[in-house]
Amino acid sequence: MVGSGAREHALVLALSKDPEVVALACAPGNAGTASLAETYGVDAVDAESVVGLAGRWKADLVVIGPEGPLVAGVADAVRAAGFACFGPGADAARIEGSKAFAKDVMTTAGVPTAHSEIVDNPARLDAALARFGPTWVVKDDGLAAGKGVVVTTDVHAARAHAMTLLDDGHPVLLESFLDGPEVSLFCVVDAEGAVVPLLPAQDFKRVGNGDSGPNTGGMGAYAPLPWVPEGLVSDVVTRIIEPVVAEMARRGTPFSGLLYAGLALTSNGPEVIEFNCRFGDPETQSVLALLRSPLSRLLLAAAQGRLAEHPPLEWAEGSAVTVVIAADGYPGRPRTGDTITGAEADGVLHAGTRRRDDGALISAGGRVLAVVGTGDTLPAARDDAYRKVTAVHLPGSHHRTDIALRAINGEIGVPVTN
Ligand code: AMP
Ligand code: GLY
Image (cartoon, rainbow, N blue to C red):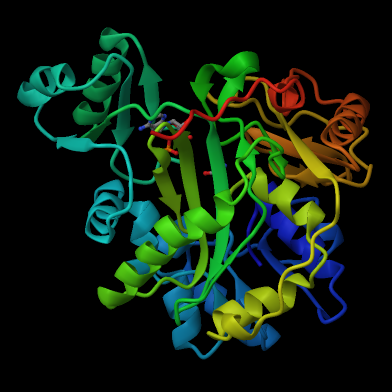
């Protein structure tokens, strides 16, 4: 397993429960993965080091968690060295690495998405802003971990963000605003074009309750979604995922790995906000908590192009809710080095953590822990998650207290399709 977040901890946890998995190594991992896997201080984007570790381990499967190494071509290097690898090569990872590339694929494939324009010259910015909004969506055309996006009703804030990006030499992507609730749908995909969707989940991108404050990497998630229309998943697979997978193959860059569709359910039906080339964080923590099928077989089948033979996935009844505990200052500059206590419960997954020399668990990143609750119902799963959150102590930390609340209160409305 390559990566170091709570997503990787969730993947390692699921693999550790899989009877077919005999040994696990994690690079670089965190204090949580260290209790389940051998830890190696390998830089995840350093292809040579990752390949070296796979060689020393004679790895049956290398799973790459984050987008950074995928976009950098680490999966290509691992495959070239003869190892099975879960994750797309650099060419296919552009579906996440370049928003302009993703738009081009979607346009060719006839997949519904927001209208967009790229602005790379400050002199053209004001005229372009006038063609969008109100509610402006201003993005960095590159990897930004969800943090390069500003969605605002204030044209001055939109302009200021665009100018910051342009001043840093980054082209700006302006998009029409997609109204409607968001859904994250993860699909395991192989290079032969087979698609296996996982349970739909919802992510909470903004830092504060009621979706206030700046965008983050994700502050919580739940799965499945009680409010989505019947047939949504198969509809999205047919109308969005399969056409994109076919278009990637047609271009000679078939996608193999996890294709993550970030969707808005609009009055025109589901539209794509973004694609990611890997499991989402923190949705994965909720989704994998409910998966009953052995994860290693699924990922290996995808890596080897045998997904069409994989039996249907089995899921636990019930729900899972994930609450992220973030460090003081996140999503700005997080304070690190604080001592964490009470993080021993089942379901407390580590993101930015490490062990100090004296063995104490300390914070080492912005999103520090992801606490997963499960239950027969969504309210029960939510109660379980927040009960575990209460037991954790991290000075200065913050978390949202409204994860899954609107779903439980029946407040999420899907627009009637035109
Ligand atoms: P992204 O990095 O593209 O995932 O954007 C981060 C978040 O910004 C998304 O999860 C949405 O909440 C919001 N967002 C991005 N693009 C749009 C859009 N065109 N319309 C509405 N919301 C958007
Ligand atoms: N959950 C958002 C992401 O993984 O990008």
